[in-house]
Length: 373
Image 1 (cartoon, one colour):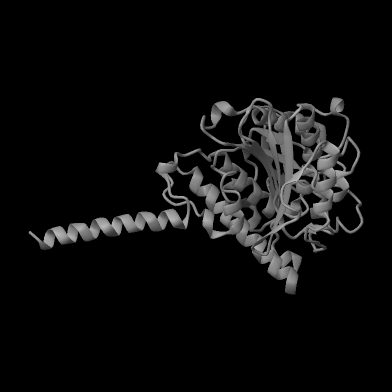
Image 2 (cartoon, one colour):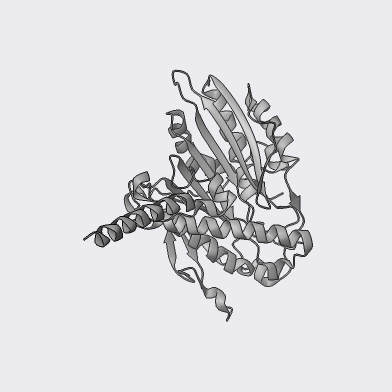
């Protein structure tokens, strides 16, 4: 298991709020976390490139270091080697699980307690530490306090607030299909109850060994905590999305079932990228939520009524430069996502078809008018 955990007292804080530089109506906050490079780890580090950093956290910014390799990895998605990109939070490889929670997650929980839906989504390549950071792996769910991820800490917080009712639900999106991993909404009386139900569901999640990760998630997992707070008539939802990692097929050399899984994962992530790009535009006219089950499932998380934290996890070594640059480009686009009024955009193919029908009816009416002149 990865070991991000260190004493908070010995770690410099790499978190700065940049709300002044982002849109006031932005529903997405973005944090980047760098996985440690663990030297001499059997089966993980096989070359010097895997032990050479390609990225660093400086204050609230992430710097993609210049490459010394003459290939096409020096610039991906507008992120150029040697340039600095500012995010709401940046966490270097020495930052602990507790600091990530306190800095990036705790403020959102206060929003959640006030009655607003909240979502936390982990994005990044396979093996970049998403599942560990979220606390959605079997070992991290039941791990020590120091290594516990966001979900166990968030559940502990929820139950300290004396909620009236809590239910949990775990689902996965595997090969384009949504599978329930818990038997519907399960009531939880304590944080331990909720974690036990989560563990039971996670045992059913699709995982496999690949060239990129010895225990790679082959599905996107969405864990939903629904809470009815005292004095409130409507329940609010706290969603955690642990997205399966993108993999370059040439690197993983996947075949058969693994190849089909990788293609499905990459397709859904590409569609997610198009949704984010559309929502980041000034006046989106088409948002392809319906192009993939993942984006349809998360349509109220990205650009909807939820306040969302995007955790972009990166491996941080030279061998992962291309994937790291791609993840940073996605995170940079997410900074520009705006909350648009429903009347100002079309939510996927259904909205697009309706708009097209309106235009056709108007054109036919105009043609009929001309014929009668």
